[in-house]
Length: 108
Image 1 (cartoon, rainbow, N blue to C red):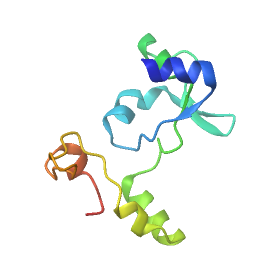
Image 2 (cartoon, helix red, strand yellow):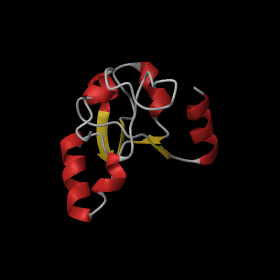
Image 3 (cartoon, helix red, strand yellow):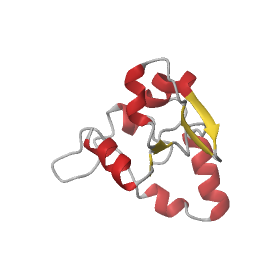
Image 4 (cartoon, helix red, strand yellow):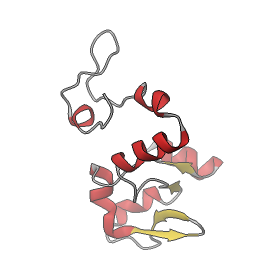
């Protein structure tokens, strides 16, 4: 909620939600390309989705595998391989390698 307030006050923020993720599955039918960017439609099927109006969704039609392919083509695979998203990181800060985010990660 506070991120949405921030975006409304200071301008658009990009959310990195990719094909097949929970967020993309939830808003799949309420996304359109407008003004050169993917956004939530003006009148979404669920009024609660209006909170996402200030957000840009640049990866909403991109798979994780496509992101890896793009990284390989552009030469930043090493950087991408050092990033991670984990819901339950270990006490030392490393990824758990068991949660959904870790299992869906194409790079290990």
